[in-house]
Length: 414
Image (cartoon, rainbow, N blue to C red; front, side, top):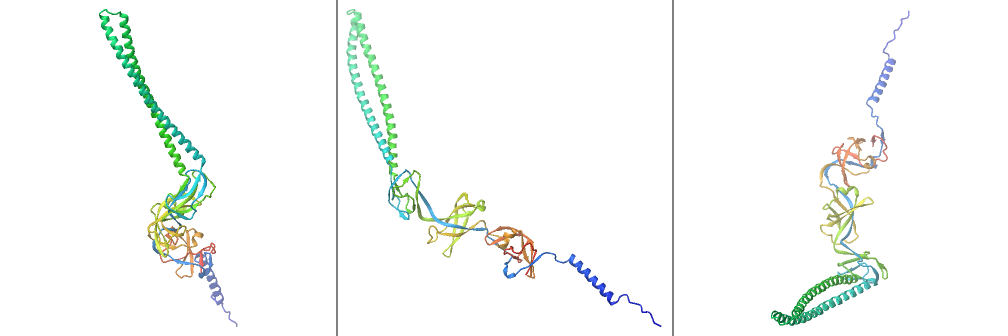
């Protein structure tokens, strides 16, 4: 008699199925709960730049370009206009103070000078004639007064004698009254003559003062015209290099026109172009340095030109010590200090900033096999380093080369 064999529940097939299902569920749970879902990209480590975050002195400076210029440049502007009669010195030559550079010709100026000189001569003659006339009038009046005094004396004698005779009833009263009227008339005439003399003298003195004033102004005018004529000869105001002279013989020059310049070679300065972004931080006294013939030389800003052209403005910097052998027109990079050095967390400047704006970077993990995105905050910048304010620790490694080919991937694997 056959015996029925009872099947076992936990057979090999069932165990295998349950185990496989459990493993699949666990895999799915791990995948959804714990797996790294970030987008990844494989990169070649040799083609990127990895820099270490450090701590050190942050020097806030910018690198600008300066051009060597003479410490003083004197513009030659035409004080008067005219045509160039003779060009004595060409550009590029050294000149001494007072040396003739150009000779100009202007016939109108010469004519005005002659007319002014003629007017001054006429006024001199008028002044002399007026003074001579005053002297003649004084002599004439003195002679008139002398004759009057003589007549008054004679008339007074007759008047006094007739007065006595009239009192004694010797002569007619009409004769007495006539002598009295003759005497009083001469006295009155003398007073009028004296008054006329005072008026003539005052009038003559007033005319003389007016003529003297007019003559003085005319003589000053003559002197001005003479000096103007002298300005037709253009002379070097200082000794130096006549670096340019932009005129030729026969050309016409207007008053105030620039005809050249003289460079004072007793000193030099640097003319520096700076980005307008820094205009609020630039001030007189700010220092800098540059290298020349293997040595560092100090500079200091002395003048700021606030006008902005093409996004840049200019400053003048003078040397603490003028480098030997430096020449006009040479250019050199200058390290311009914007502030004192301070301790800071630093990362080197690199192409990453143009792609991220300094808001995040790829930070290499401790294994050195991958790098992940991390938000950071950067502060100041100089040509070598960025100042790190948040997000990075000293000793961490950061990819500082360009991120252009990394797309939006969050993890880079090496």
